[in-house]
Length: 186
Image (cartoon, rainbow, N blue to C red; front, side, top):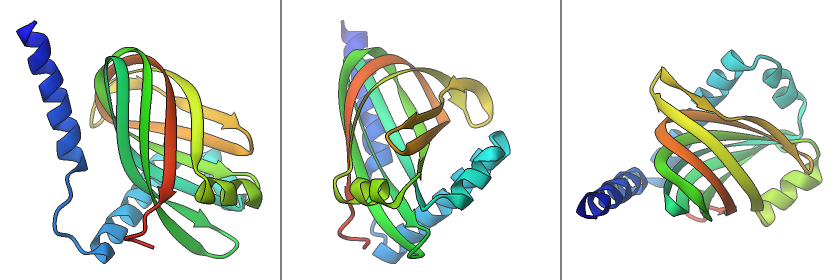
């Protein structure tokens, strides 16, 4: 039982360390998110070349960085990202948080790219930002070593690509995710 408690504390520590912020200025944080966006898009285009044409022809897209922890029957996570409105040539910086229930154990650091197929869906995402869904995946990856099952899903006018950065996770969860504007960065 004590080993299990240590495992939980270690996983919580990893998540909290990833969420910790330093005394960066809002401009520094925006720059970090924009660099993350470019790195994620480069990785997506390398692994899925047709995604480039889809994103370039879309009214907009979003890129989020997310850390997720699953402890037996509960999962939670959080992250930051940016929505790019191609028509207005404007970025909206956002935060995200998620909670879920289901079986699993692990920690995962992943990136998500949302491609909006119409302006109304993008506006609704920025203004309301709720997503609800089921998730089943497996990841055992550190940098370029290991593998992860993720992929591409199309739902309600949005195509979602997931890229796993690192983690060790085996989970099947039903979760709710909330995306909202970051008042400090917009």
